[in-house]
Figure 1: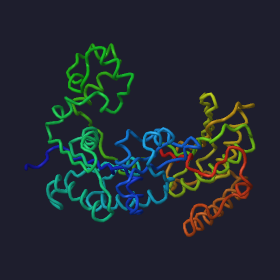
Figure 2 (figure 1 turned 60 degrees about the vertical axis):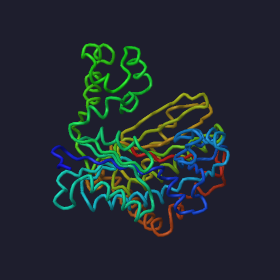
Figure 3 (figure 1 turned 120 degrees about the vertical axis):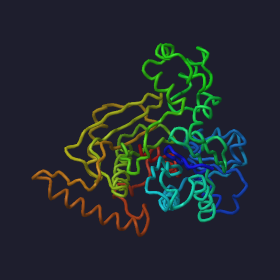
Figure 4 (figure 1 turned 90 degrees about the vertical axis):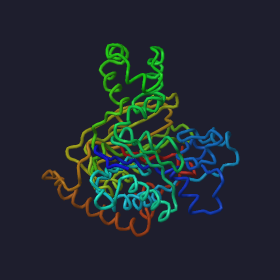
Length: 408
């Protein structure tokens, strides 16, 4: 086996991650179909499905009620994102023992740049297999791995032989590897684009790679040339170990449509508290507050406001969310509510403080540090804003799993 001359990119994708963690930690679930996600009574969706459940046609993002109809014997579990995050961090520690060039995409997948690691660990293929085996031995979890000269090809490769797959694409073989694959395997080609290309006789990535430039220009505009290059395996993007997230948010789909503005305001307080806490944990502050509402008729309303300075404190996020909610005036019944923050900067950047709000902000920051210390010791729900301790109101269910945390 010769040495790689191009970049060596490894994509590691944990198989059915949330469900696999649950099966590992609950031996009675091993070999049984497991669904992780929200309650079907509260419009929950599938966050992860074990491979035993996938045989019945269940997939991620499917409504939980539909998933349970397809697989009535499945065990449904509410997500435990704190546990999954800890497990993800443990797996990433394995990655970083081989290379510091690790780019996490989510809790369950990451790119690793193994270029130049041969002298320490041997050929990259052996290193990638060793990483996969260490995940199995040390974490009792299974991962699929793709190894190639680019991020695009490595990610496609890791998905081809799941679960427990290992696919290596040798340098120079990218176009031949991609050629027979369907268009939908390519990131950026959705159903509408694929349909347009098929009408023109372009059915595979090989067809796309060899299509005339003027045809692609007429079908897709400037994107046509980019997708053609990608279909040949050309992807110059490097692994970026410290990628700055674009934003962070919380949203919830209610079990019943909500008409109470007081209840919506309480949800905004809860979301602001959680988003601020998570920003501090990740080491970021945000400047752009975004409100998202989906009505009972599935109309989505969004509003945003730029703060005077980036923050990781709940109070300014909550007040901005309230202001945005009030700009919408009278609302029809609400199905989904979300609050997020964008324009993130590292927390190391000095705070910008006005003359008159300096004391309040310093007091709020001190309070936040105390809250964080309590939560680290006793758990996320150990301390909450007083208003959230009131009796449950309209739209509140017993299962909080309709709530989704998003890192963009």
